Image (cartoon, rainbow, N blue to C red; front, side, top):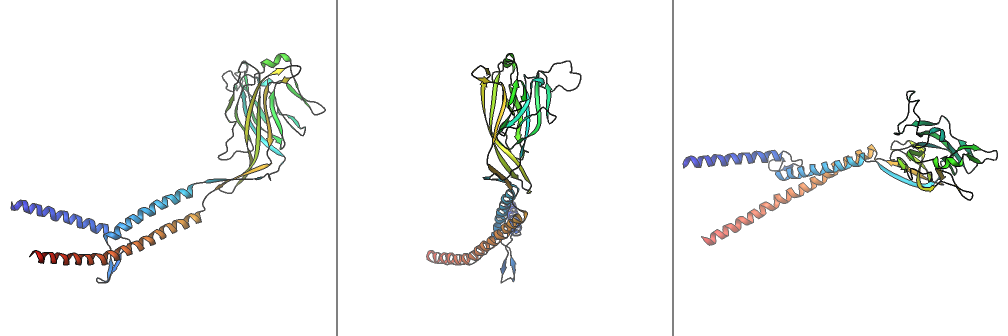
Amino acid sequence: MRRRRAERSEEASHDTGIGKTLIRNVKKVDFFPKFDPEAVRSEKTSLGAIISITTGLIIFWLLLSEIRGYLTVTTKEHVGVDILGGEHLTVHLNISFSHLRCEMVHLTAQDVMGNTEILDTSAVKKIKLSATGYPMLGTGQGLRRDTGCRLSGKFKVKRVKGNFHVALGRTQKTPDGRLVHHFRFAEVQNFKAQHTIHYLRFGEPYEGLINPLDNHNATDGIDKAYRFQYFIKIVPTRYINSRGTVLDTAQFAATRQTARAKIQRTQMTIPGVFFIYDISSYMVTTSQDTQSFATFLTSICAIIGGTYTIAGVISSILHHSVRHLVPHYAEEFKTKGLRLKARLG
């Protein structure tokens, strides 16, 4: 019996020792030690340690939020009158025709000012495609006949309303400025202009730019001749990245219309692909905005200093409240206990 009591006493003393050690270690975390006038030294408390740990967690959470905001890039857009000016606009085009051989594909551009240009130049390359849609490169495939053609390159157009197109027949400009397509009527139904636009853009690309016709497939009526028309509204755009670099380019919106090819006395609808564009008189300024490092550093200092100061005030208030109220209530409870004991005795 005595041995069991001794063992229990040892276990209780051991648990008490662990508890005291834990409390001492927790008190070490107190960042707000209080001056004890009786002991003439600073004293760390468990309450101060709890407030310190809570303060550290709050500062950590606020710092994560501030770092996330510093690394986030916000995009702002502003619409105003077009001030870019310039005489030309660069068009980047990559388009494949699965049923037109390269000898049948001719790219032509014209505008409302009467400027006409046949773009069968080195700037816009023609690439022969096999029946599977892959480029036919090298001389080993010279005996095989191409079944498709890809146009790839860039060219400049005037900054006025106009169009560029691939249509039936070989184009020729007349002395009076008109554009004439030479073809035979029997060729109309064999000109199948079904196509894939790999990309089409006006000006240089920038981060976040979406071109609505990229990877666009137009395969309507694969066994018939069609006229594909894309009505494009171009909006001049000035892009300013987070480093302050300025890029003058353009973005656009597009609508497609499709019609069967018809060659009649009263109506003529030549098969082909027509990109009919107009340029807006408004300009969009797109800018990337990031927080400066000086502002970020100031915010970090404000978070740490402000939170630490407020936590110190709260710790001081709670410490003095506990120090004065606890003895008062303890004395009151002691007095009531003595009175109750006296009555019972």
